[in-house]
Length: 384
Image 1 (cartoon, rainbow, N blue to C red):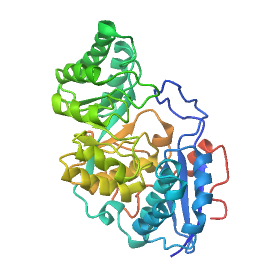
Image 2 (image 1 turned 135 degrees about the vertical axis):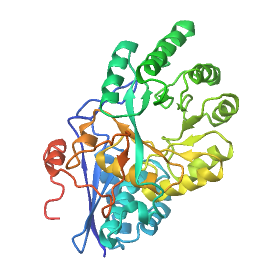
Image 3 (image 1 turned 180 degrees about the horizontal axis):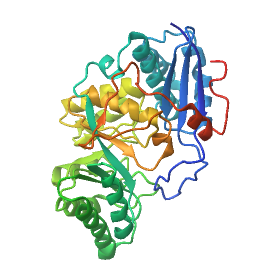
Image 4 (image 1 turned 30 degrees about the vertical axis):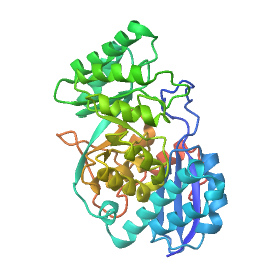
C-alpha cells in the first residue's frame, strides 16, 4: 500500500483563546488536519499544531520523500523524513508536519490490520484514561464558576493556566493574587480532585526566574498541586533542574521541545518529573512513544501536552494506553475543534474517565459537516 498524496486543511472560525500575551483571534489558524491518501483508497488522518500555510509548504518540500512510500510503515517513513530534512531545520514546521503524517500513518496501519493504534504501539496497559480539563485562569469568582460547571460535566482532574497567574504585578500584591486564584480553585473542586497549575513560562518575554518559581512552588505545595507546569522560561534548563531539586511539587514541561534528542539533556539534568511532548508537534506517535520510554529510564513519566483537536486527543488516548505510567491526558475545554469534530462526541464515564477506542486505527469517525464548517468549505478530500 503506497502513499499517493498528502493533503492539509486548516481549522478556522472557533479557534479558542490560548492565554498568550499576544492573543490569537477566532479566525487564526493554529490547528491543521492532515489526510494521507493511499493507492488502495485507505485514508489516514492526523493533526498538526501549526498554521496550515506552514504545513502545506512543508508537505511540498517533503513530497519527493513520501510519495510512493509504504503507508504501512509509519516509524520508518517518518524517520526517513526526519533524516532527510536536516538541511531544512531540525524541529519547527518540518517536524510539526511530520507529526501529522506519522499519526495518519498509524491510523492507516490500524485500519488495515484491524487493530487499535495503542495495541500496535506495543500493547495496551489500560482501556480508559483520566482526562484533565484544561482551562485558562481567571479571577477567583469566574474561575470557581467555570470549575463548578466542568465538575458537573464529570471531570475529576483540572489544570488551570496562563491568564493573570504570574502576570498581576510584582511583589506581594501579585503573589497574593496568585494564591487567591489557587485557593479558590482548590476550595471549589474539593480535596479529592487533581489540580495542576500551568504558569505558561513559554509565553513571549516571560519575566519570572528561579526565585519566583521556587516561592510559588512552595505555595502550591500547600494546596496539594499535582504538578507545576512551565514555571520558567522555556530554555532555562539549569534553573529547571535546580527547582526540581528544591521543591516538593512535581515539575513539568517540554511542550515547546521537538524531536526526542531535544528531551535528552533535560532528562539527564533531572529537570522534569513529568515530560509533556505534544504528539502533534514533536514528531507524532512514533517520537512520543520513544520519549515516553526514555523518560521512564530517567525517573520521569510522560503526560502528553494537547491543546488539541479531536484527532490529536484520539492519538493521545492511544499513546496513554501504550505507556505504563501515562495515566492522564489533556482535554482542552470549550473548543469545537475537539468536541464537535468527532461523530457522537466524547463521553466521560461515572468515574470521570475516557474510554480508549478499541476499534481499528485511531478509532474515531470524523463529522465531515463540522470539518467543512471549520475549514470554510475549503476542498480537502474531494476526489480522494
